[in-house]
Amino acid sequence: MDNTLPLRFKYAAMEAMQIFFEGRVQGVGFRYQVKQIARGFEVTGWVQNLADGRVELQAAGEAEEVRAFLGAINESSLRAHIRKQTEHPLSASPATRGFEIRHD
Image 1: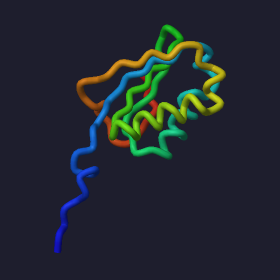
Image 2: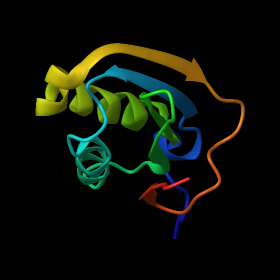
Image 3: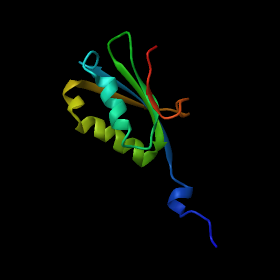
């Protein structure tokens, strides 16, 4: 019996991203909605408010899954609150299990 996984599972490209959202992104349930959207994707990470009024998101997973997750955020009702979105690749995945809201 062959227990090997197909190549697409063995060598899936992983991606970790840091995204900053600017606009009216605090006080509107932004973090909660991002967490709800994350439930539909196989991503790990977190979302938190920043003192300067932005929201920071860190997410990791297979590259396609991370991109689909970010696309779902931009296609959701949250889009109306986002004035600017800045993305940066991360060299390591966020240290978390699952996806959480941080209250730092």
